[in-house]
Amino acid sequence: MQQREHQVRHAIYLSFLMVGIASTAAAATKFASARASTEAIVTIQYLVCILMSLPIVLQQGVGELRTRRLGLHLFRGAAGVLGFYLFYAALDNIPMADAMVLRQSAPLTVPLVMWAWNREHVPARAWLPLAIGFAGVIVILRPSAEGLSWWHAAGFISALVLSISMVATYKLATTEPASRILFYYFMLSLLCVAPFSIGDYEGLLWQDWLAMLYIGVAIYYALRLYTHAYAIAPASAIAPINYFAVILAGLWGWLFWQQLPDRWSLLGSSLVILGGLLTIYLARDRQQAPPIIN
Image (cartoon, rainbow, N blue to C red; front, side):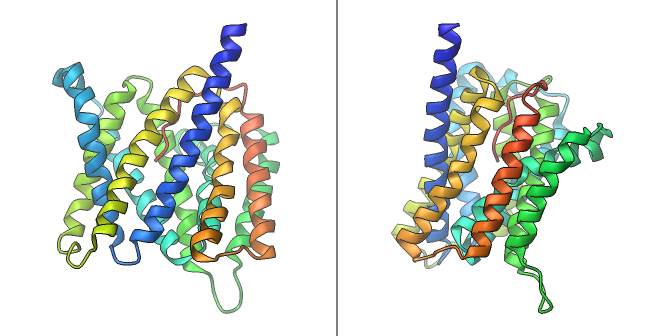
């Protein structure tokens, strides 16, 4: 019992560290996007992740990369890179806290994706937190007679795509080890986005290159920490910590860009977080593969 409690505490510490690192990567992305294209940022991110994962691949042997599920790996990689692209585009155009809370609405859409993918039954008790969370999303999006904030919509679509990638990871994890899933994710995502970044690197300052390199390193370690945390503790114990990223995003946005959320953003964020926490709580007894963030 004591060993189990120690593992859970360790996983919680790792999760807080992961959230802190990931939030600084988001801040670095917003800084770099002032001059660098989203395509360039995402390309450098995945290139760095590939290079950092090579030692593990070489240690295990190239034979460990053999897979019969290349199609699902490709689908998962495409979903992951699209999710990052939309999230980074949103970060460049709306307050950090808004982009982060919309991204963190992904758990709300997972049950709907599971239903669409497998026709998996959505329990009646799951609809209330979904309704609460989606009400928060609508408050943040604030559709009006003048139209919709498309950059806010991009932030929410990134969450929807992230949930698709999470379900694909769930499917892959039944037969594939985490190292293989991550390697194919990095490699296939890089191949998807790199051609669109050609010619986007002229005129960048050394600060931009440093920020993009940091993003890659930070995302790689955040992924490793996240995967390890979920391997030693139940999702219900550590998944709620992801919402701490919204607070950190608000802090970085205020410190570096003088961004303060208005009352509608605060209300919407509160509803999204409440809906997400309820969704995680109600799903605590279900078997889950350790999700890998994207």
